[in-house]
Length: 349
Ligand code: 1HN
Image (cartoon, rainbow, N blue to C red; front, side, top):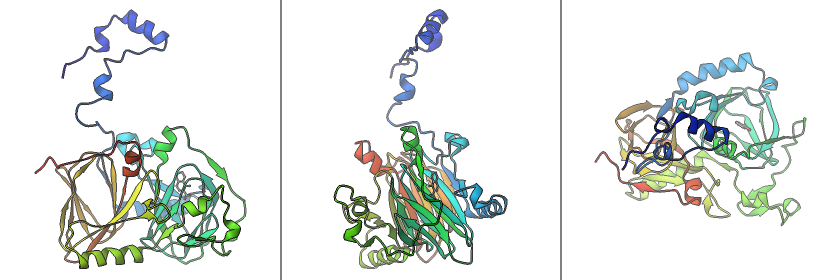
């Protein structure tokens, strides 16, 4: 590939005149915006250990009352994007949120899509458009774009969860904003609005705005996902024991931009993933997993999180002689919709 001329190859007076007229020559930057063969991601391979996060999150619980935080979150920020930009990848935001007994994180709704993966504790609830979703360890709870949500805690111990949002993408698109809800806690003792996949109270169903029907499942209990994984592992010899969280109404991914799945690693299994065109996030729900990304190995245990940039060689190793379980978030729904998604063979075999 031809090496192209740089800005320094141009007379300074010419460059200054371009600048004055808000013009930029393409050729000095062409190789940067269109690198050969694969992207040059800013996303770095980063892991966050829960044993590092937890004490700092509990300290935040002492330092900042919920009323002064609205959402008490430590953001898992990728230094490759600049820590202050609060991105795990170009599309995904990750945060660990703490809610203490008796606390209430007030109702709001916003354009970015969010999910919560519950990390520890019980007795807390997220209410999504009035449906009260109990938060149990490993559960996945959706708050899709535009749905009202608030968190409350009626239990005894700290509750912590991992938030995954498409905030970086929505913010970059200049489409990110929030609306505040009622100042009072909503009556989430009310009967649920959705009674099961495809069954909704008629009083809550408006044909022109059937958001509820578009997202009939808001809570995916971990017990169900785990049982599904164990059944797949028992009944088939498939190498990748994986379930995808889908929207039963549309048969599509559970949300439009970020995809969610869970993998069961068989005892001592070594699972080599193909290269993918999107960044990925791995979060250990149960067990001990070494994740090798290209040549670097990261030892993860329960509640640890790791993100990988596009087109890396990722190997998951279960170091236990019992199953380990990993939650996965990735950008494939977004990339597929735009026709950008691809997979490649690994480059280390
Ligand atoms: C949000 O609404 C929540 O509702 C958590 O718990 C994290 C990060 C950025 C923007 C909105 C929540 C968030 C967020």
